[in-house]
Image: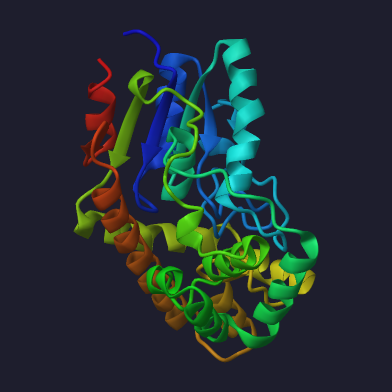
Length: 302
């Protein structure tokens, strides 16, 4: 079949997106591009389930592990990083196979995400300092006073989105709704893309999540969590909220047995996957095709 301009693969965590992306990149002469907000962090290869070298199948992977763990990295920054990368891949005649579980990244790609203004560093640093001192629940209460509509959409535990709303609110002196109209410019032509939501049956996904966390432990997740703690300490940024970090730190401190930590991390991951699946089902309809397995998705390209 004719090469698409881009192939987009979305879906909940542990659904098999990365392996499918490699197979499609092999078929179309493509490059796998990350669209997962946790896999950008260099310090969390294992706990973010970033593909290891032996899982890449010799295929080039981009925008993986390029952000330090203490940096706030937004969907807008990902969008800006994508502009030169897509131009480079077009010049090389390579198909971007864009793979991940962060819905806002795909919205940025397709034009459903506004280009938001840059926030001056003093404003950003002030809110980050308050987040570190007061925590997300307290700042969510602050947001509820200044922008009730934004606070109603953002969970009180979602520190990154709370920070972003507060920063933008101060920088622009207006509510988030005034900036987010879903009318930004897309980076690819939707009609020339192939768009997949990989959504295995929920019982199967639950099993895969448990199996994957065991593999993370075998691959050195405890050492990775310990190294992250030594380098950064507790962080309120997205990287610091990675599932498994706090659970493994409690094991390190003797406050939790490893089996209990594993159960907590797996439960949190399953809850997160359920939220992702709900979001994709509600947001990704027109132009997106849902498949329960990678084999079914591959067959659709025949």
